Length: 556
Image (tube, rainbow, N blue to C red; front, side, top):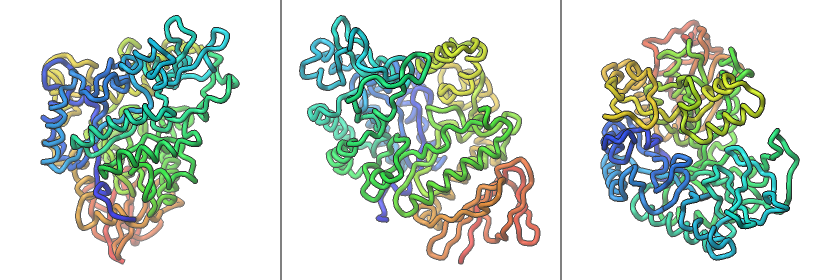
C-alpha cells in the first residue's frame, strides 16, 4: 500500500454548537474552537472534523444547508473559518468539514426557485414527481418518520425528502446540479481545508422505477431502503465526484456509508477507492440497555470484537476504516457499553485501547476523553431535536405510554451526545458565560477538563498516553501498516490482537470483564501502556485485572 499523508491522522470530532461559545450567546462557534486549539494540540490529535457550520435554518442542526458558500452567522464568518484553518495548521492539525450533498435546506435558493417552477431549470435540481390520485408518488418512509414525500403548495408535484421535510433531496441525475456542487467543493478545498466528512452519500442514487411497496409499519409506509441506499449505478457518481474534486487537491475523505456490499468494499476504500476511509458501523447498534444484551455487556463486547476483527482481516493491506466509538448521532459510549454501576476509571480507560491500535484512522468525539455520559430527561420537551420528537411520536403510535416512550428516548436519543462540552466546574461549565442553547449534564461539576488536567491519573491523561503511543515514531508504521493477528481468540473475556511488521510485535491485551482473567498464552516484552500500576504474571501467563488494558512491545 502506498504511503499517503493522511495515513497517520488522529481525528477529533467537534459539534460546534456545543463545543465552546466565544461571544456569550449560549451557542458554540468557530472562534470558540480557535480558543481551544492548544487543548486539542496537547491532547495530541492531528485532524479536526467540524460538523456543519454553513448557513442553515437549523431544522436538522446544520445538516439542512441554505447556502453552501457561507458560514452561518451563528458560528462566525468565512474569515473565522480561514483563521481556524491557519491556526490549526500552525499546531500540526488539519481541518475537515462536513459535506452534505444528498440534500439541501428547503430554504436554499435553488429549492425556492424549484417550488415556483417545478418544470423549470431548478426543478430539475431536485427529485420532484407528480402525485397519484391525490397521494404521494410512492409509500417510502422518511428516515426521520412519516412520508418521504411532501406536496409543493397547491401544485400536483411532490418533492422527495429522505430526512426531514426541510431537507429536499438533490437530483444527482442532473449534470448541471453536479457541476454546481463540484464548484462549491473545490472552493472550500482552495481555501485550505484538508478534506471532508461526507454525509449520507450512500443515498444520492435513487431507484424510482417502482410504485408502492408492501407496508412494514402501522403507518402504511415502507422503509424502501434498498431503493435509495447504495443503489446500483451510484459508483458512476462517486467516481466523477472524486476525479472532479478530491483528486485535484489530494485531500482526505471520510464517508458515511453503511452496509457496503463486501464485494464492493475495495472500490470504496481500496488503493484507488472513491474515498480515503469510511466509518466502520459494525458496532453502532449494540447497546447494553437493549433487552438482548441487558446484564450481558461482556457478551455484547465479545460480539462486537468478533465483528471488528473480521472486518480488520478482510481489509488487511487493502484499505482503511475510520475507527470510533462515539459521534454526534449516538448516545455516549459509557452508557452504551457499561451499566452505570460498572463505570469507573478502569472500565472507561480500556475503551480507547479497544480501537486505537487497529488499522485505520482513530477518531475521538468531543468529551469522550473525559468520560462524558448521558443523563435521563424528565420531559420530552427537554429535547429539541426534530428526529427525537418524531421518534417519540412514533413510539406513542406503537402503543407505548408516555413514560415508556420517554424511557426509550432517554436511552437512545442522539441528543445525549450534544450536551455542551464540560470544561470546568463553573456556572456553565466553561462553555459559555450565559445559559447554553441546550442544558448541561448535571455531572459537569465532577466530570470536566480542568479537574482532570490536574490529575496525572485521570481519564484525560490516559487518552493523552494512548494518542502519544499511536503517534510514537518507533511504532507508528506498525500501527498503520502492520499485519493483524487475533490473539486469545477462544476467550469470552478478552479482546486481544497483535500488530506485526519488520520484526516488531505490538500486542494489545484488554480484559473487557469485571473479573480477573488469565491469558491462555504466555506474553513478555516491554510494557508500553497500562491502565493499572502493575502487571501480574503466573507461569508466564498474564493475570489481567478487571478491565485492565495493556500494550506490549517485543521483537521477533
